[in-house]
Length: 537
Ligand code: ADP
Image (cartoon, rainbow, N blue to C red; front, side, top):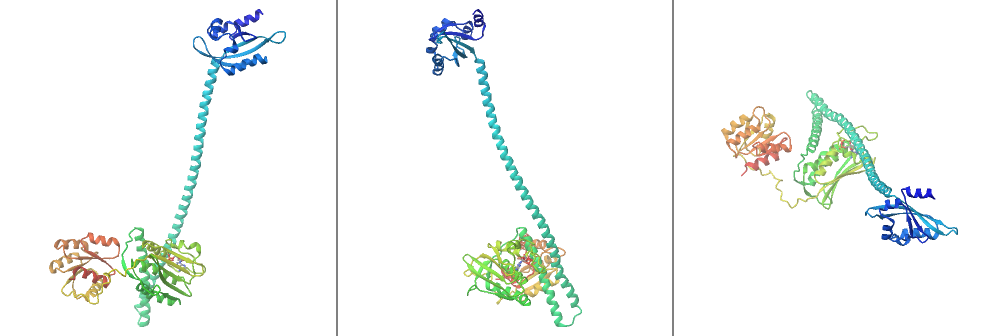
């Protein structure tokens, strides 16, 4: 017993003894240290009874359990001690029994677990933080995963694009080589004919032979001209310099010209060329760019004849609402379905079974597509391999019937210009003769200068009414001369003669003191039209 009382005295824990009803009977020293008050002060404040003084209903139940069920119980509760400080107390209540096994006393052993609780709450807080960080990391991780997946997708996409670009570059390289090979063939063939046959001509006397050879030379010349025109057109398209020239287009006349041009070629191959010059019973006149329309139809008819060995080529058109639709149908070798789109690419030629390459540059359809789209329409083909092809395209249908025809100037009753004088600055003899012949029916007087300096001199001396100025001449060029003449008389009309019908030529001419321009080859109608425009009346 003595030992027990020493333990009770020395222990850090508070020991409290309650009687069988829960009344506090005794406390040890440690109790005073923990609670900061004496037994008396404690009971005065809280009352003596353990059960009654308990304020927390859950704890009260636990305490009652100890008394009712006669078992030891344990609980923790926060207490405010005398100093006002809050402490956490963990209590173990153990019943002590009498000889009849009834509760005689209850011993409470209490320990101050405030630090433990504090540590616990800190751990909980840190756990919470860790959880939070974990959650953040999880989120970042899933974002990273997302980025990684996106990056992988982008890399895949880019790789695919690069692959396509690489294939395209290789393909375009291959096409360009094929184009160059073809081009050199296309240039050499007519050139060989021109050189070869003109050589033969010099020793020939037989008129029929001469005519035959001249015809071949002319055809070869035209073939070369077509090629050069195609290349110029492609470069114009490439440079974005395609310009729209509005004309009044008489479809019947246009198709008639095409028929006249191709009938021989079709006949030579034994093909029937059928050109329907009217839609139903009427011919139509529309507003469009005549040259481009002609070129598209010409390309399609030329291809149709080229790729048809038997049967016919039929050209017709119909008006479909706001559009006019042209068809060039043939009974030739046809085009496999998978090539229908490809053939409209530049330099693209397809290999036809059992057929040698028939020349060409692979530019015709690409040009036609660009022109049709430029005119505001679409081009397409329907074809089955071996069963002919139907190339068709649309352009806007703008009827020109009601528009006054200012362009269709007739020179039947041509103005008499015998009272006027034209100064022609032209260094090339044959070009000068051509101009003189073309102008002769107007009876206009002509003066000739062989370079710019002479043109100025002649102008000063004779004061002609109009000047046709060749732009490129040996000695002083045409533009310099034009500027000087305009300084003498700013009212004299000067028309520049340029080599090509390039758009910038017109602008260049207007910039350089000229009033207008005319492109070579110069035709009668164009030339007389311009002269009349500036000096008649
Ligand atoms: P080119 O005629 O100079 O080869 P195109 O661009 O006009 O160039 O035509 C491209 C290719 O389309 C031709 O090489 C030919 O393979 C095919 N093609 C064009 N028109 C026809 C047609 N009427 N019938 C069959 N194939 C055609």
